[in-house]
Image (cartoon, rainbow, N blue to C red; front, side, top):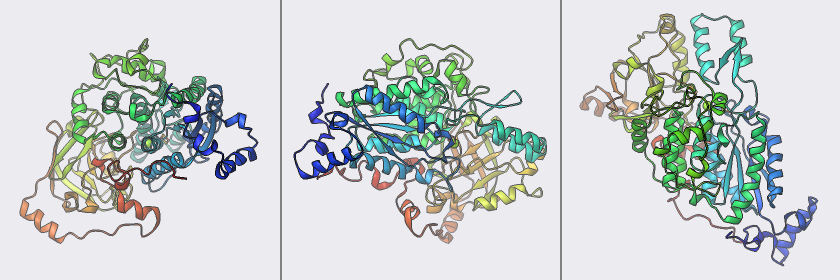
Length: 575
Ligand code: FES
Ligand code: MG
């Protein structure tokens, strides 16, 4: 142990014999605590992202009590600090607008309060990167408690997956192949318990990333929220963080370049959400690891997808993944691709936490020798349409579209695009490339999950279920299809996407990683000269600040002033 109770950070608030500290002690007593409760003990913050409007975190109201029990057992004193919840399903225009706000809130909650370590309670998409980014910048010992996936969906005996099956059945409803009654059945059966989305969407991707970064207890991210093992894991988090404080096991010893490498590899092997790209880059940079799109593309080329979980996989959901051995079993299978000496919150290297891990169902977690896809979790394309890159998930799209050339059909706003795709007389063919712009980090703003542009009704009725789609938006991790996303620089700041017009020919070649508009240079120069920058949407408040400071997708969409090298950290509170 490298910390003694008198050298604890919180002792600066409570130990001195002065008026200010006396006030701190008096106010603890006001809450009914004796010095015996908190004195000379690690004080553990629990950042709880519970809210009445976050169905994925509904159990956090109870789970926080389980964490507190663990902290008390471990000899610490727990303090619950509520942090904004970022409910993926309800926040408009998009939860991504608020990821950095949560990161700032987490960092400042930890900096300002008398706490020595923290348990981060998150899971619904943006809560994981938001909490981790903030806590990395704060630098106190931290452990991440994943919310856990909800139970499998069910409709008349058929397994339903979060998001993915909603999109699928909605298209069938638009095509007129299912009744309103069947649709209602899907609505009633798709989310049956608390917990985050149970496909390998953004939530499962990000909690798996947290685990492979070494920030959770072994196996924590795979436990379904409704399983009693989740309760016991929560209590273990409480016990463990107290020990971490005394060991002074800070995140800079855990989230290293090796850990980031591990997280990238695991993300690829799970057929991760495209959102992982933005969040991984942002989290890595907070930890001082300069991860780039090219690093991610390299990993996408060499690492096979071995988790057979929808939407990249064919059949299974997170509950099946847990029963098949979960993330520990998956990591054990890909040991040869991981840095096993990377440190974890358990206080031992990753390799040790994987000992004894077994695969119980080889169809859910495939052997490296028989993957779902040999490569193709993610690919980064570059060219005159996206000089700083864009992202596609080749594993999730119709193969005929991987090398494709076709005319653009361009929309400047989501409402205009949405109205057009319902028009059965729309001038569109399966070879068209549907384009949406002004949907990026600064333009939308917040880079909403609009990137799985709806298939035109006309094509759906002709039997088509996929076409090439292109935008500077993101898409949900539960989405699928030939969607090219995150075009950088975005059109709102004058990226080349802004110069594209309906009828221009776009050429995409995924194997060769290129994306171009076939327009001569002189025409592009003339169009650029005529281009007028659109106005920012917010004139005041947080949205205004967001627009002024948001970085592009290839840089992780952090705020410029939150980047590690922007300036010196504030350090500890002075008085
Ligand atoms: Fe919360 Fe999908 S809505 S994880
Ligand atoms: Mg999502």
